[in-house]
Every structure is written in C-alpha cells, then in structure tokens.
Length: 201
Image (cartoon, rainbow, N blue to C red; front, side, top):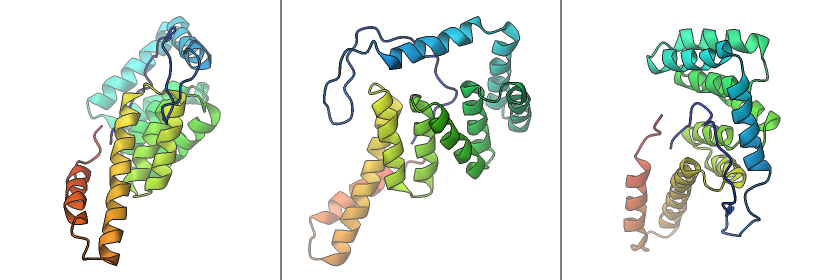
C-alpha cells in the first residue's frame, strides 16, 4: 500500500464527471471538491514566500533522511499555524517514518475530522490501519478517500490491496472449515503472493 506525502496541490477538475465507489454517476465535478482544491492551491500560492519555503525545507530534510530535523521544522511552523493542513499532513508522514505510528495516526484522524473533504489523510490512515491488520477499518478509510475524490489512483490501488487481503482471509477460513474444497487453494496462494508486497512510501 502507498501513503501520499505531501498533500498534492490539486487543480480544479473543470467539468470532468466523478464516478464514486460503486460506479454511480454524480453531477459534473465543478462543486465543492474542485472548489476546495482551488482554494487550497490559492492559499498556498498567495502565502508569504517564507511559508512556502517551510514546506520546501521540510520536504528536503525528509527526503534526505534528516527526519528529526524535518520534524522540528514542521513543529516550529505548526506552533504559529496549528491548523495548517499541509504541514500537519507532512508531520504525520514524518512521524510514521520515525516509527511513531500512534502519533501519526492521531494526527491523521484529527485531519479527517478537521478537513473531512481531503482524501489524502484517509489514504495514509488506511496504510497505518492495514499495517496493523485492521483491514475493515482500512477499507472504510479508503472508501472515504474515494468518496471525496473518485479519481484518486493511489487510494484505488490501496483499496485493491486491502480487498485482496480480505479475500485471502475469507478463502483461508473456508479452507479451514472444509479442507476438501481444493479449488480454493490456488486462489488463496495467488492472493497471498499479492499480499507479500510491503507498503511503499
């Protein structure tokens, strides 16, 4: 499964239709998702250069493996702008990389509560839940991500991974209850091979 970091600076999607989970059609995508994306992008564009530099610097430190320095920088920024969704999201990713996953999860949950329209926190929350084998909760988080953005490819891929693991669990249970069902074994083996790929950053 794949976390996303940082929050993409999404551009308005114009008149492209959005197909939510289940394939049902919705009105053209010029509503709140595109509007929010445009507002978020505009806020980032018009922010002071020093603020934009903070995101760049935290990203640079994180990419270079200087995670503690990146975290210190992110927390200094959040001390004056505690509701900044971009930096909160980045901080959660750094915490996860530092193996402080409980703290990362709390921050992502708070982001989904404060900004329920953003799909990326749900995706990254699902990655942490799936790593703990809480697959039903991970599926629910990914479905929320896709409800917010049906064109979010990473969340679609991660949902496929979670559903494959859930299917493998069901096949294993069926085989345990009735070992004579030999047609299940090849399906189970294939799904186990798919599930061997670890989460990727």
